[in-house]
Length: 482
Image (cartoon, rainbow, N blue to C red; front, side, top):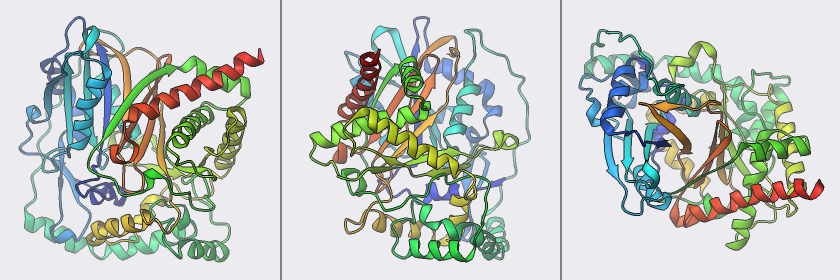
């Protein structure tokens, strides 16, 4: 068995019937040769020994005395996790988005391994879509990318893997888990004391704690009295003031709206080269441009820049197969307040460069250390309390949205012989963060995925069209300069 980290457990504690902790990858395949749920089942069955999260379920410690554990599911049934759907005519992307929105709205069953694969047929052009959902407690974005690589092949010919027969773990009884929980109680204050000097100077850089009254003052005092505190990377930016309130900073509903599209990677690289910035700078500026247009249309554009919560992997090579969450966070500004796209990109680049220069300023374990301040038995209550603070209209927001940039395969990928055409990431949203924009690079394209609360943002397709237009706007700047 492997125990949850406090960060893993936070994604469980956040669920309340409106927040759903799973992330979804929507892959589109050229299935002219056929791709069925049975084909997908065969691939997974032959490789499931390589994918630990697909075999393990959560085992809770009685009374919440300690963090939960991952253990082999003695009742594992692969058919419980694979589902077949068919989109209605005309089988276009809007029809597909409606099916996928329902998938994002449906919580995963935590009494079994928390994943599901939905094989969606009936798409136009002989395409088949596969939506793979896995709980964020089991895997972060980089872990999802690794899982994706395990299930795919670099050629239409499927790789053969030696099946490894493993002895199933003995399932502990409730009484044994209670003993574990009681035995773990003395470790909790030790975790807290060990985390205190690392986390205290940077509490104002933890998204869930930023809006809490008094936290900035406590962090500032700790920085004064604990000078020279050095970490190994982690929270890469030092946010100043809180972000302005927008429609996305309130409580979310249980509904979801999604949209997805691909844009040429060559365009983003051309913008990067022309302006002497990074790919990530360009992506952030594109999102800012799209959001500015969208917010202006909806009469919700603040005078100040927004703030984004940007996950950064701190994955270690020796832990590649452990999955789970090893992420840090930065909170860079999103310059929706700058009208000129060139000036917006320059400001974005400067802000991101400043963030990277502080890469070593705080510990990579900051998010986990901060969660050690909360006893496991109080995690769910603390999550509810943080929701009240994060969505309060009387204070600034910690951030307005989540933005993730995940590297993908540079060469074509295949599943059961079917060629992957695109892979759209559709991640989780939370109270106070009702919008998520994630991209994955694949071959010569960038695959954009937007997920949000329709009661906050309406149809995600409208915002996505503004984001695509913002990329085109930067491309036009290059053409005008030639």
